Amino acid sequence: MSEQVDVVVIGAGVVGLAIARQFALGGREVLVLERHDAIGTETSARNSEVIHAGLYYPTGSLRARLCVRGKHLLYDYLRERRLPHQNCGKVLVAVDEGQKVELEKFRKQSEINGAGDLRPLSTADVKALEPEVRAVAGLFSPTTGIIDSHPYILSLQGDLEGAGGMVVLNTPVRRLQPTDAGITVHCDELSLGARLVINSAGLSAPDVAAMCSEAPKAFYARGRYYTYSGRSPFRHLVYPMPEPGGLGVHVTLDLVGQTRFGPDVAWIDTVDYTFDDSAREDFAAAICKYFPGLDVARLQPGYTGVRPKITGPGEPAADFRIDGPKRHGVRGLVNLLGIESPGLTSSLAIAEYVAALVSE
Image 1 (cartoon, helix red, strand yellow):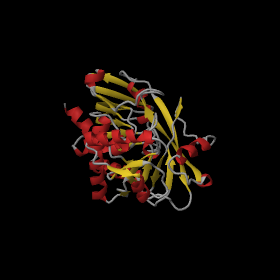
Image 2 (image 1 turned 90 degrees about the horizontal axis):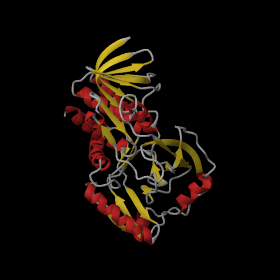
Image 3 (image 1 turned 45 degrees about the horizontal axis):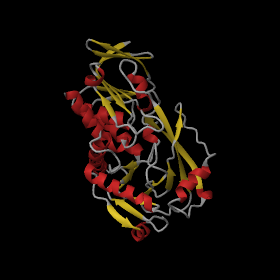
Image 4 (image 1 turned 30 degrees about the vertical axis):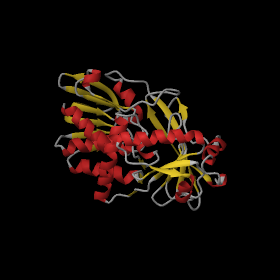
């Protein structure tokens, strides 16, 4: 069976749905193809659920620009629709004198990025905010928050469908075929001729891109999250200094106040959500650097997530890649590559950016 549609979005994660919503609200006919039997089941559902401020990312990078813009859009969206979230703030800590230099770098970077003023914290200030945390200094980020991602994803789907768009589940894309009129999207029992295809396939985006254009190699970094049973010792998010591949094993809170620790970083060859509890001692040791009162017996295996990276171990973290025809030469195709953290925070801004790119 072959049909025609204006816009096809591949991937019904938070970013794909935000993009699809953007185009549908703009009056275009939009169809979202999702290979799984539900929306938002991969990266969108397996992360820290943090609304990031935008303080870490290099000057002028898409990650910096879209995080800062996306944060404001996201808070406004959540407030307007009364969706669950909390602007709880984050404490970034230095555990020794050497790390104080890194703190100052982040403070300056936050200012450059327009991510909001970070308040310097002394040892006593950290103790006043988080009595259980050990640190020689810190920074307080007032615009960092937390979100329940599932209601947000459902709301994006509702907006999309309210504007006439549609999500089709259990429909993996097998082949992309450029044509004079656009791109034909081949699925198992369906072929769609589309004027515009947005590849927002997350972990599989490099594979989808490679069907008809240049694409980077995909790398996968798995991170574990442990829950912490009993009453939470924390009132804010608490972050150590970033580590290669991620932001370090940090403290996050959910909207009922339960503490989670994670993620760590383990490079894997294929997407695998297995929870490996064999390195619990290393995980606990990372936490104890800033939370010496950790009760290891209260750490309970939670879940894992896999970051969709396009650079590998030992390489600098890549910027978001949002590649249009000017980069890859295929008319009617936009590839979103390496959309890891802060993709959730940036989702509405990414949608704006893609719409503007297409309008060019």
